Amino acid sequence: MKKKTLFFILFFSTALFPAFPYNESLWVPRDHKKVWTVGISSLKGVGISPENSYLLRSLPLLMLEKLSRCEQHFFSEEEKEGYRQSLMVKEKEKVKKELSLLYNAFDKLLFNVSAKKQEERLRLSKGIEEMKSRLDFLSKVSFGKIEIPEVKPVQFFKKTEREERTLLPPPLVSAKETSERMELDFLIWGVIEEIEGYFYLELRCYQAAMDREVFIYRNAASESEINSLAEEAAKKIITHILGRDWANLNISAEPEEAEIRIDGRFYGIGEVDVDLIERGEHLVEVTAPGYRKRSVKIDLFPLEEKDLNIKLEEKEKEWVSVTTYPLDAEVYVSSRWQGRTPIQLEKTDRMEEVRVGKDSYLNYSFIISEKTPKDIKITLPPDIIKRNELIREKRNKFYSAAGLFVASVPLPIIFYGLALDNGIGGYVAYVKGDKDELVRLWDRTTFFYNSYIGSMVVCTSLFVNTLIHLIDYIALSDKTSRTTR
Image (cartoon, rainbow, N blue to C red; front, side, top):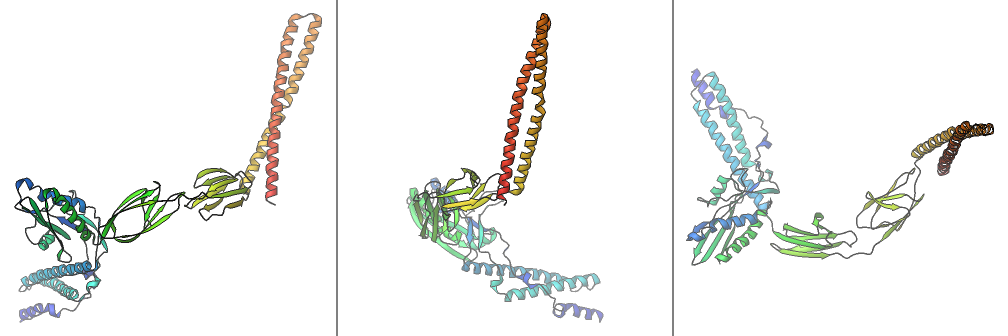
């Protein structure tokens, strides 16, 4: 009786087990693929002669070279909807597979009533309940809750991460099966048939998100023209890889240093080639210092190759007169030294900072542009702290110069006295007729007299130096007292 009761409870446990609270937001399917993958296969040949078999790979490789310009794929609303449906189908299949595995594991433990196996069955019951709730949630949830990015980077198929893009073999099964097996978002494959010296080329493009062929190309040409067919097809396929219409825009500007902007974005200087730009209206702006700015609106059509030459008109130079009080202030424009005030500065299209400065005064800055007034007069405010330091420095220099002068004053007196004493002694020796003493004293007199002359020159120079430092000190102090009143 106990075994029957236990069997009954275990058999109906999945139905009787109470509902558990689940975080349903985690059940919404997510797109975990970071890139939009494109695969190109070698062509299938029909009636191709051995000498022309190279076309089976050369044409796809030529197309691959042209298509590799595509760096991004933009999702259309139709593709987003198809992508959501694809993610939903894959998620349901995944949940059903997991649910089937849980049921199989649960059934294997059906007749095992040991305590350890009962715990295992209980765990499996919880998993089954969760998978059933998850499957029910997926059947009710709106596709709009599945987030799809607006754009993804394009990556061409390669067997390994280190390998460069490569060609796939011609599909042996349907495009859908091939795309699923190789995890491709976009598959390009085709057939080339040789008929009496002419080649018939057929290319097809399958897009996995929409589960259909989105483009078919058919045309025929001779061997010398077959490459042009591949290039023509590639141009049209680019539209599907990008997910939008496109055009090429080549812009050249004069002068060569002109800056080129499209829709406000800087593209280059002098000449730019804008590849795969979105078709429609665009604003091209060209600017250069000393030239009038020019703006051109263009309307690009799908697959259009447009050349645009823009020549700027040189404008008359306009000047700004800068005067300062005090004069002789240094002027810099964007860290480039221009000279001292008063000065004339040329206006430019750019906004540049002008900095005016002078020792002992605070710096003054303003922006020069086309709208700057013709005359600017600036009164530089004194830098009191810096000026007081300068006054202190000049006062110390004056004291040092005065000290040296005072210290040098006794030297001429001393040397003159020694020269005079030795001269008198020489006269006395001359009167006495002492020639040796006369020569000795005459040499000493000459030495001390020359020293007297030299010390007078030094003393006079130090006196002049003291006067110069005194005048600088008085002038700066007087200027400071007048500017701070």
